[in-house]
Length: 616
Ligand code: MSP
Image (cartoon, rainbow, N blue to C red; front, side):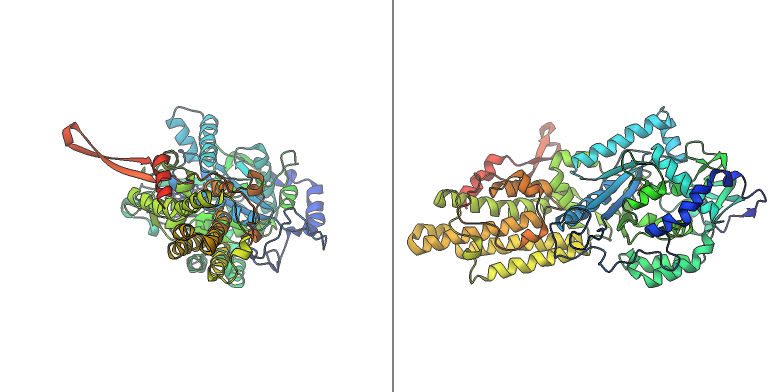
């Protein structure tokens, strides 16, 4: 903001006070304070529990602890609210897939999870996109917001709340929040002059720009703007933010992003403009209807308004008591400043608790550039799902990219990873084991898995690996969690290759009995894999579970504690072996008499995979 000039305007503190009913203040100072809304010393909710719980899960899937009567906090996880200037791309899907895996893991731990996603629909960028399509902003928002919902359906995203910032309930929350911050003397009026990036929806500091005043993220020139705006007194919160981060270093994750945030704060926080005089498409400023609220001051509140129940009174008190503060905001690293600096300061000003953690993941890149709508170098996620299925897409991005770092997409790599891990290592192990069980044991387990594994190191290996997976999930190391689960399957394949149960069956007698036990051991490992990988590949795991003879309901009500060895019992009948994951085939076809070569990708026909199973 070096290029910016802020002049205090005398007409501050105008008509807003008439919006604030006396009862509002009464409630705010009495009831609401009691309701954990205000923490002058420590803005975090004090909690002895670790942020992401522990692996010792329970089955108490509701909101209170029966023994103590104490209210158990829900696990509230959010994705960013996506701009609706264009349909979703793989970069937007990435955050949501990760959030869904974390939410599913927390549900397995027995937590009541509130998974929030949604769309950010106001502002200049959206209004411009709508008019470019010849639509009204609201029609445009309806269409794109629906496209997000459809994509989440295709990707098996099990969100609990979808908030649109054009929802009237959200508007009520934003206005109340604004009024609260205003009442705290943190909003003033001033003239502003600076360089604005419409794609970031942010005034830029000239020294962070490239040649020709281009935004480094969007590579488009920033435009000079001069406006009479309302400002939020961010600078007042410099010290509180510094202290907050020093006392709660886990607030920003991964830990290497904390330094970045601390150095922004240290370099001096400047007040920022929270209204726009020239943008109609937005929520009117409560004390000046000619201006609209700046998109970020509007959208961040979506994390709170989303908590409102359908028929609930749209006020902050109700929303907050439904689950605020959030346990985890999952975001991309480009919007860290908004979440780790602006947002906490806004919450402090409004007397609300801070979220417990902000995790800034890396970018999906194409040719080294951030994949994005503005640069037009995106991958269409629906196309990927259509071609490869949702499990493959979810697995590849979570397994391939160490969560927090950047990661590149290549189709060859995608196919190699998915085929090797899901089709060969996991799918084929299940298939060949079930094939042998069908042929030799009428698809029935001969003994309990606990008895089958007596004296076997393999059981310890599986138990250690599943514990490792749990710890990785808790730390949000999603790739490592996948790796630990895959190692179970690798160990299973080695076990099979070493024991060769197909030969033992041929020998008959005690050898045959040992072989039958071996199959129980492998299937027990598959059962554990089906639970432990279900946050990442829910459909694949549902199919594995069904093959093991369990019902849909049993799968839907799983708990992480069931990853303990011993679930499969003697006498349990397995389903007919059917491939759970079809290999992706890559073929090169020639066209025009061999002049042009084109790569065709298709899922391998089930028939061929079944043959592979019999051969095993
Ligand atoms: N509307 C704001 C967020 C407001 S939250 C109160 C916004 N929207 S966005 O659609 O531009 O971006 C949403 C998220 O998608 C961000 O976390 C961003 O980092 C992420 N991604 C967009 N492109 C991405 C990649 N190429 N790779 C990974 N994530 C990326 O910002």
